[in-house]
Length: 400
Image (cartoon, rainbow, N blue to C red):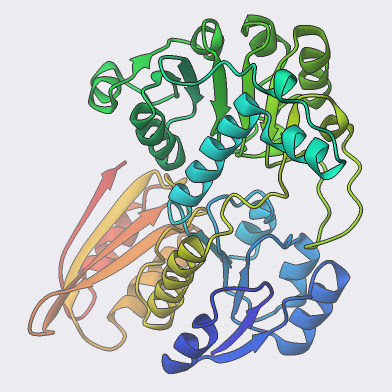
């Protein structure tokens, strides 16, 4: 099985993949047209990326490509629609970098409160200004609003509470019971969460409904001089609205992600927000710790091993949760050659599409049960033909 690794991963990953029978090619520089060319030349079954974009052209370039793994939490850099049209599994490694991102969020919080970066810049320039930088607010007893309470948000909550901060949180799935278990106050809306907070940290996944969600209404609700943190995705924040809030309301910001980032690991960066006073920025490094890299590497190997063994793909993000099937055909049959082929031929001749199919083998290997999702009901005559088939034990059809 050919595997192309198109980003730098934990050093043990290629060797571990070879141990399970993979032919591994590592090309950490492959991106854009160069990645498309490598896929066309190698024709891998599995592509592993970290931050590199995977486009429709990449899916068309690899005839054998069957699995793309995002060695990280999000999948916004992968064209999921193109993958699904080609029948390519897309999987990710959720939660494996949660602690690393949470640690950076807390680091940016402290840096913004104590203006650590500005302190350092002045010292390196030979300027001593203890009076200016000695006026910090402090964090103990302050309120932190956590917007998005997935695994990263929960890790941030643990660390904020350990620093004696009060936490108010909002998330689409956050219930009163879960909030109580986390030791936080649940807000009904994002605007309600940030209204009385001294600091706000964003941990929303990027989706159609979250793109630009942190905008004018959120910044208008925040207190003047509050701290704003984003270690999630740059696109969930309305950039111009954030800049206005920094300039007009005196917000301080700690940012690890930006709407426009260089495609590779280095290159020019032109987002003007980092030039504003009170902004601390890092280079989208939230997940970049040795611990997180090793955890993601282990999960990546686990996903490839599952695919190689024919097992269900862990963390697959582009499978239909509900198929267009309107009826379920259930056929108990002897586990013999040709039984399923005969059933499928009857369905084909009835011009009905199979939307889902599972054939379950019972212990001993003598009998099986086929569960076939159909785009419409199989006519009575066709049902009788299936039932009359050799080695067919029983047939039933039910609407779903």
